[in-house]
Image 1 (cartoon, rainbow, N blue to C red):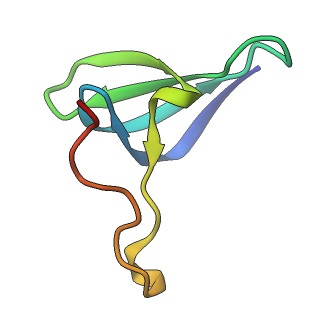
Image 2: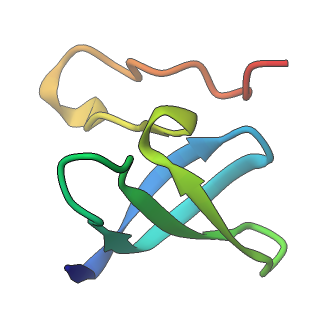
Length: 71
């Protein structure tokens, strides 16, 4: 199944911040893949355990994900 987000989701990847615009689910036995446009325009694919989705800072808890990717 492929799902296109109507509004891109802000994510942090090993290569920096980006916007996820597609989600690909291959089923129960395979990790899902997120298609992300990075800030420099490069499009990359990431497994679900390689990215972090930013929470909404307007909920009163601030940013719940550090702004720098893990090194």
